[in-house]
Image 1 (tube, rainbow, N blue to C red):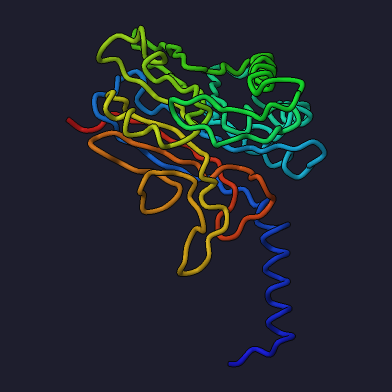
Image 2: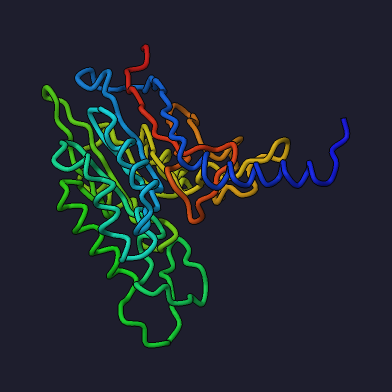
Length: 297
């Protein structure tokens, strides 16, 4: 069958409407069971809700409602891996979206690259890299990048969300401990995995939150059982045959989101709930429930 030019134009218009208005509002809840080696028995069957890349904007009622639905899912532990807002003016909308998490126990988060942006998005001389702090133009912008991150972290703390900034916190159950460690965003130049892991006794299980998955090789070398990341948006637009147009990660992975294993350790990359643009195709926003179990000896 041969498409006429008007028919092709109509098809493309329909796809554009779908990618702009329909798929970004279609929340998918994914479920995975992970059998982890040397997993403590008291935490067998622990349910973890992983959310990432909210990108909530002021006035975006659809995105606020989407995040509220995802944040309402029941779980023993909730982990959020960054990119909450685009600008500081989005903070009230973000807190409204995360209201279902207020007062819930065991909610942890790290910040993403967008969470560090200054108030007015001043231009950068170069993109920050691991080990090198970001540098900004010499124009007299009112605040440094850390200002937005600090205010965001304080606001999340107000909801009862523990923001891990190169830190770790223990979760205790029946005499056993599970550590939640989190690093600053690697692209910000502030990530310090060694500092986050300092003080954790050898042999105790650790879950790592890192906005970018690029830190996974270091995490595996440190013996971390499970790393949770986002940042890739799952590619956000995935074309037939071609796949994702961009993955936003230096890791060579068969796909830009999902569950990956390497040498007994796991990485989960969330496709996220939002994006820098409200556009998704063959990559709907997702919330993931991970059931953590002990691997058979």
